[in-house]
Length: 201
Image (cartoon, rainbow, N blue to C red):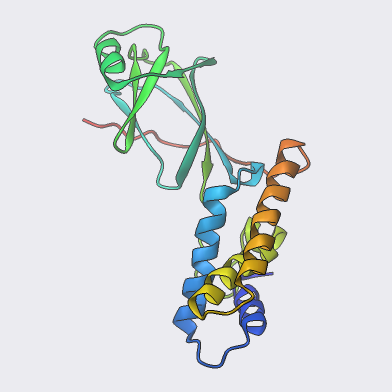
C-alpha cells in the first residue's frame, strides 16, 4: 500500500461522514509516529560510518534518530557513562571508551584521535510520507499496524465501542513484528555509508 491507500482503508473502516481530510491525516500520522516509537526492526536501523577529522568535538545526533543501538570507535563499542565522568575524560585524547548524550550531541571520552573510525548504529524514523503515492516500510510491510492504530485513536475520539478491539490488534501486531525481528526474519536494514559528521565548535 501507499500513503493514500492506507488513508482510504482507514476511512472505510471508520465509516464516518463527518471526519475531515485533516483529521484523517492526523489519525494516520499519529499511528505511524506511535508505531515508530514501539517497533524495533531491522528496517528501522541506520548504520553510519565516518572518520574523525581535525576539529572534532562531538557527534551531532542525526535528525531521524529514535534510539541508539551502538556507538563504537575503531571497532570498540563505547559504554554510556554519566556526563561528569565523560566531560573529564573528554579533556584528554586517547583510546575512546565512553560516551554520554548532551542535548543533540554525543560527547566521547577520552577524545578520539584524528583518522579514528566511528560507527553509529541506531533506530531511525521511517521515510516521511507526504504525497498519497509515497510509501515506506510500514505502509508496504505492515499497513494493518497503521490502520489499527489510527482506528484505535479515532474510535476513542468518537466514543466508538470498537476502540478496545483495534487497540488490542495494534499492540499484538507490534509485538509480533518485533518478535519476528528478533528471530532475524526481517532483513531490510538501511545503510548510509556516506555521512558527514557535523562538529560542535
